[in-house]
Length: 518
Image (tube, rainbow, N blue to C red; front, top):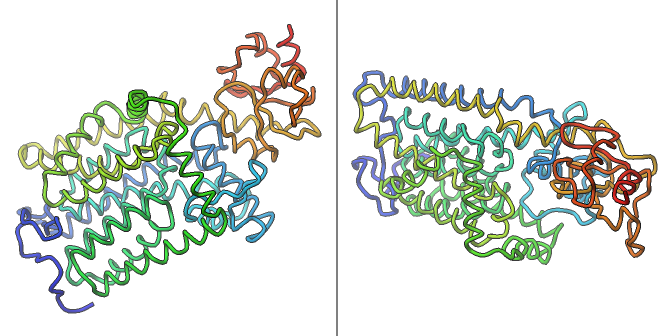
């Protein structure tokens, strides 16, 4: 594109000048000012550092790429995509409802979300071999996208490289990111589109690669999730407010429209409007908790996922992001969306510990602004302090990877998947039985045993419920989390396990019956 657009922001304004649409042009290379090094050198070292952070996280995740699907949120959700992939490979594109079939877990196809992860899982399923890695690759790669996309966004807002790297480091060194970011597979595309829009608003004549990158990010964001579609709409209008109708806004807008059209075709064509409406109702209603119980649960989740220092910096950063003109609009939109996502879909937020993940956008931008503000007022010994902070972050990340957090959230739940992957059901068994707590929605169990999971209760075990449609046989195997056994079973039942892995065990129905009667 050539020529200067009269509707684009005037890049000659000072960094604090307001534009009509709520954001101001800023110095794209604040690190270079007064250093004599030039922007190229600062950016080169900055992006090398971003690459290093990304590589460290990637290496830390390598053992998980081939891990079994287990008894945690990761296993339950990504295990669904394992079922999608297997059914696609066995039944073909049409027979698997375009990779939405998740038999034997459920008979109705699951297409309640835009299809990007289904498509990427199918793509990686073409790799040679047959292992969990084919399914894990897509969510982990999308999680890695968060890091460079976050850097591009913060740099677009004029945040210095030092503050950008520290803000990213503070975020990735949390349980929220390191454990659960594969479930936030829309966060990377959303941040990438955000970064592209911020840069396009500031550049009257953007290079072709930037426009193409924005189009790709817009398409991915609208294919990845409903939050991606909602935020893309706002970001598209924000871009239009700065540039009006030109080749850039038309190209990015067309990419968004294409992504939304493909997503609606997938969701409505397979699930239908009524099914989608039912899913929305499930996430907005059905809980019998009070407002106080809801707030307590959200605090428990926040305290579980984020360290105390992040919880302290996050609200301060949000306030700073709202006060600074160049980030005010974006932080306001992200804040409104995060609150709406949690309060409108409150039942989803009450059930799922990671539901509040859009808050990480606020953390990235807000803490970046806060660090930049602090750096401008404490310029002396900044480099030394930044290096010290980097060392502490690496140490904290190592604690996450090798400490109790990894064992509790990752390693121990994976034991359940490893157990059922290595020990199949009894001959002729027709249901994948579970008993006790901690084993809800075991899609991973359906994947490994190719049976529909069903929960046992005392009546089914004792055979006192003749009206039950599905009756267990004495020789059938039952999976139990031995730390959460039902009260009607004695403690001695743990000695009757036919196989164990960690605190998970497989038991014969006959042994459960004898223990319950004894």
